[in-house]
Every structure is written in C-alpha cells, then in structure tokens.
Length: 390
Image (cartoon, rainbow, N blue to C red):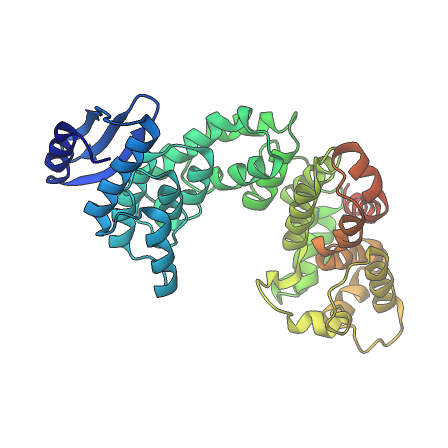
C-alpha cells in the first residue's frame, strides 16, 4: 500500500534539505527529523493498518537514503561483506528511522563527534551512551560530557552489574564529570561495591578518601632508594604499594571482594589488581621478566590459584634458583624481612581472571551462592592483599 499523497509530498520536501537523523514514534505515527534549522516533525496519515504503514514509511526512507527499499538489515549485510562502514555510510544509516541502524552507528569505531550527536538525538539509551564513550573522539568532544551525565543519572536504575561497572569505568575517564560528581559516585559505591571496581580500573592512584601510608613506608623507601633510582621494578612496586595511594587501592580492592554480585565483576576486580601490581605493566604478551621468573608455567594459561602460590614459593625460596632475576635477588638481600610482602606481589601480578574458569564451568550461581563457591579461589587473593596492608 503506497503512502498517502500528503505524506509522500511532505517527506520528499523534508528530505530535500539537509537532514542529520530521523526517528519515528510508531505509537503516535510521527516522523521526527533533525535538520540544520532544528527539529522538524510530520504527522503521518495512514492509508492502511498502522504497522504496515510504518513499514512503508521506512521503505520510503531507505529508498531515499540508500537507494534500496530493503532498509537496514539487507543493506548492512552488503556493507559487512565489503568491510567496515565509512562515515558517509554511517550518516545514511541515521536516516532510516531504525533503532538497529542507530546501534550500528554508535558501535562503529570510526564514529565522529558530529555523527555521535545525531545518533544521540535519534535514540538515547544507556547502551548507546556506553558504546559511544568507548570512542576517544566522542570522549574529547562536548557530546562526551552529555553522555557521561546521562549515564551517571541512569546508574540508580541500572540493574545489570556488568553494565553498571562499564558505565562507571567510562564516566571516570578524564574530563567527563566534575570532581563533585566523582565524589558523589564514590559515595554510591558504599552501597554498590561494583562501582568500586570501576574506580580501581580507571583511577587506581587517585581514589577519593585516601588512607594512611604503611607504617614502615618511609623507612623502606629510604632503604630501597638506590634500587628505586636504578629502576629496580620490585623496589618501585613495593614502595608504590606501601604508599598512601597503594594502601588505599589495596583497602578498596579488599572491600570490593565483600559482596560481588556475579562472575563478571569478580573477574574485572581480579584483573584490576593484576594490572596494578604487574611488574613493568606490560599490556600484551609475556615479558622477559615473566620468563625470567618462571611464571609462564610452560606457556599454559593458569587456572589454579594454589599452583601460582606454590610456584612463587619455590621461586622465592630455592637457593640459587636460575629463574630468580638479579632484580629480585637484589631486593631480597636488602629487605629479607619483607619476603612475605614480595611473595604477595608476585602472586597478585600473576593471578588473572582465568582462575575463575574451573568454578564457572561447574556453576552459573550468582550472589551469596557464587561467593561461597569462589571462597577457595578468593581467600588466597585476600590473604595477599592483607599481607601488604599496614
């Protein structure tokens, strides 16, 4: 059934000008358009059943924007076979009045700030805001602060813990929210521990409410000063963890373990600790120090927390162990009384979320039951965190 003459004329006149995005209120039968002059709208006059008429409108828009009436699904499949969507193609997708088309735009790595503004006008949702804030170009533009504000305001209504964590992680990127909003978000974390994990990931050394440094921090810093100047990685890491910022990180990490809601949050928490304590903070692959320390376990992915503990104990205590690096031997000689703390660092830097795999394979539990099943895995991690605290 073709469009009414009135709707066809009005839509043609609308699309003859510069239109950045279109959305359709299918309930009220209104077509909204974002133009250079502002927002325009057309009240539809259906000549058939409403759902069929809306489909006709979408076919009309698709023909005008893409040259084919099939709309988003058919056209996007052709683009996928050709490669990544280009910016010009992204702009065309926003003219279809399709939510799925908007989702494709916001998830594209080449999205620009201007396209992001149009996409946000077309469909505002927490999922779309998160997708766009994963893009550096969007974060650095004015639209980035608007998206971050939306996510902060939406957090009380967010039910999925992983989405809550991702939102926190994204809004804490530099320049998106004010210091006051950061403090308010921090206070919310006291009742929603999941938010702490976002802080640990993004602002590890700039957490609000800093605790005191370790009681022996100044003394140990003085003893290790020469090694620190020589950039001995173990000396640098030990001083970092005993400082006020390091002690705050450890305390909050321990707090976040109290009531994690699901495996996703536990895994993210473990990874944040691993990255914070990892010597040299390598981003990918195995470093030479991992190989020197024998922590690669013959290249196998480690899923046994007890095996990690045993391996570290062997490395640290075996006399003349060839796997023990000169840097580690140097700090062992200077502060032999800190053996437990150094072993804790070695364990934490090697413990990744893969230690959760055996438990996840046997259970999909969440909440209290999950925490009970994970106790044998989490207790060694918590013990190492406590060893490093004042």
